[in-house]
Length: 197
Image (tube, rainbow, N blue to C red; front, side):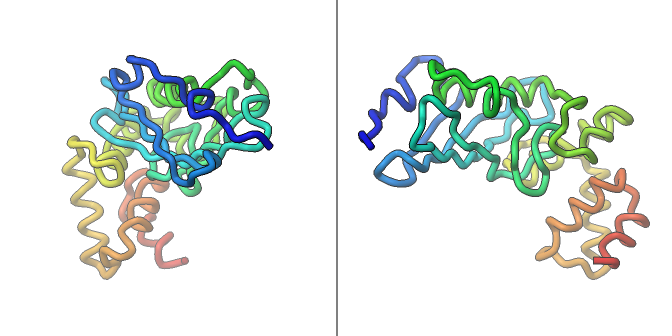
């Protein structure tokens, strides 16, 4: 196989820094990269920095890269557990002319405009459709906790602290946050879920 040219994978462009996206090499043969995107403005993800694992197949650019979120995120089209992404250009709508810049900008656009009718995470999609305000607050909290975004919900933070004070220590904070998020922030049903695991 011919080594990949760095400009083929990620052509330079002044918009890259303006849109706050970047890609770093993980290994020297360009098959594994680390991407980062900023949460788009006027979304629950604003102010967050989201890390992505990018694996370049030998058949690139004829086949899409394999991309997943490393940073935990609450979004209908991204698994809150694995970081797997449901995005057409990473599957059947890929074209050889696309670049990693296209992928990262498309992921930023996805954060700004979810597709809840084509979800990767059914629990998140249900919350998005049934209770949009709770979804926004939950997504903001996850952005604060996992992506260092500045905004969070004091009410939700109190509920996390309450469960942690009940014996679910900070080591299990991820499980506490996931349980509360999936149980519509109801402390009682989240406690039952945590105790059943």
